Figure 1 (spheres, rainbow, N blue to C red):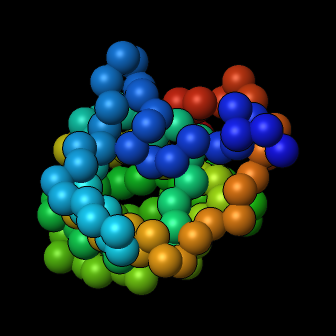
Figure 2 (figure 1 turned 180 degrees about the vertical axis):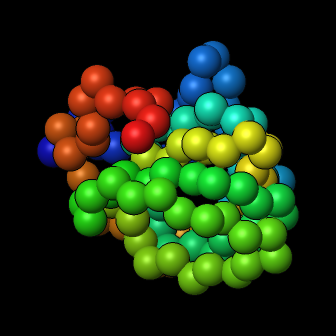
Length: 127
């Protein structure tokens, strides 16, 4: 698969001209970022190596990945250990700003997926 066809990483994608994730630190092993999603914001189709996610402020979210689409409660103070994720899309479907701190483990690489795996024409569709 050509690199141009691969699902982009979480810090590369934009929503309405803005990148929701800001890199705070990076070295050879990890990358730390803060991701902020106001109500209605979408983190369009992206990938992650294995990562830890700490919820700074919570709300109602919607995730779509290879398991399908589902609504989730994003609880402030929660810490989640997430395996490498070839593609996913996240939307803030509530009325509060959701913010995460993520620590990506570069040494837990993701198997690249082609962008054809991503939802087409559904970015931002709230169900």
